[in-house]
Length: 477
Image 1 (cartoon, one colour):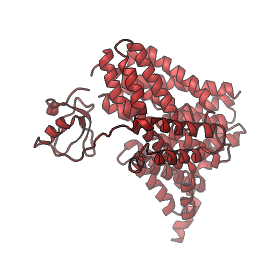
Image 2 (cartoon, rainbow, N blue to C red):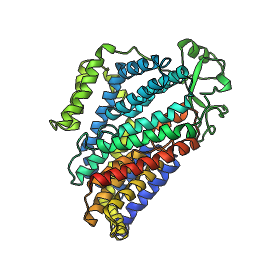
Image 3 (tube, one colour):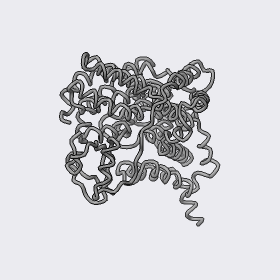
Image 4 (tube, helix red, strand yellow):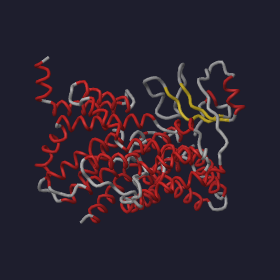
C-alpha cells in the first residue's frame, strides 16, 4: 500500500490528466449519461485520495448551481402562467396576414426570453408553436426548428443568467480570484455576435436548411398522434425518425388528444408506460412571475444583492403567490444538470489539487509565449468550442476556465477577455445535435439528420466565433 500511495503522490498530475482523458472519451462515446460520467470522475479523485471529503463537500457551497436551480423554477413559473405561450400564440395569429413579420417577431421573442430564462423550456414550448407557424405560413417546419435552437443559444449568451454555462464560468473565475461578472457585462459581445449569427442564418439558411415535413411512422399512421421520439436500448433505431423501423421493446414518446391516446392504448401491440396531462395556465398570476424575473435582473444589475440571493428571493415570491405549485417547481429543476455541475466542480478541484492544471499551463506557456495577446483569444475560443461540440458545455466551462486563468497569469496578460471567450465558446454549440440541449430537442422534433446540423452549424460556428473574438480583442485593446 505504501508503494501505491507513493506512486499516486509522485505522479498525481499525470493521473489527473488520465482521469480527464477517460472522462472526455466517455462523454464522446455517450454510453452513460454525462452526469454519471462526471460523478464517476469525482469519485475517482476521492478514492485515490487526491480529493479529501472536506474538499468534496466544499463544492456544494458554490452559488452557481443554487442560482441555476432557482432560475429553473422561475422559468417554470413563466411557463406555468402561460406567459410565453400567450405571446407566441398572438404572434402566430397574425401569421396569415404578415407571415414574414410574424416569423421575425417569434424569433425575436425567443431570443429575448432566452436572455433571461433557461432556453431549454423556451424551445420546448415553442416547438409546437413553430409547427403552427409553419402551417400558417406554408414554410416547412424543418426550416424553422434548427434556427429556433440557434437563436435561443445566442439569446442565452446575452446575459450572465441566460445560460447555466455563464453562471458556472463566473463562479469558477471568482474562486480563482477574478472579480465577479455583472449581469450585463457580456451583453455588448453577445449583441454583436448574435447580429452576425442572425445575418448568417438569414442569408445562408435557405441554402443550408432542409425541406420536407414530422413524417408519420406507419405503425401509428392511422392515429391522430404525433411522434416526438423513439428510443432503443443501447442503439439508435435509425438515422432519423421517418427511417425508423419498430422493434419489440422500443419506447415511443407521443402526444395527442385524450381520445387518440385512449385508442392507442387499446392496441394490443403497445404497452403504455406512462402518461402526463397538461394543466390549465394560471394566467392571472403571470404579472407576478414577470415581476419576479424583472426583480432578479434589477437587483443583480444594481449590485443590491448577488444573483443567487435575488433568484432565491424571487423563487420564494412566486411560490408564495402560487404562480407555480411546489411539486411543479421542483419538477422544473433539471436534476441531471445540477448533479453534472456539482460533480464537474469536484473534478475541476481534483485537477487543481493534483497539479494537472499547472502541468497543462506549463506545457502551453512556451508554445504561446511569443504570441500576441489578441491571438490568445482566438486560440482559447476555438479550442473551447471544439470541445463543446463533443463534450457537454458545462463540463467544458469547469475544465477550461481555470486553465486559461493560469495561462494568463503565466503569460502576464489580462485573464478577463480569455474567460469571456470561454463563456461564449462553451455555449456556441451549433454544429452537432449533441453539444447543446436545445439542439437535441429539435433534432428529434424536426426529423433531422446529423449532417443537417453540420451544414447549417459549421458556417454559423465560424462566423459567430470570428465575430466574438474580434469584438473581445477590440474592446479590450
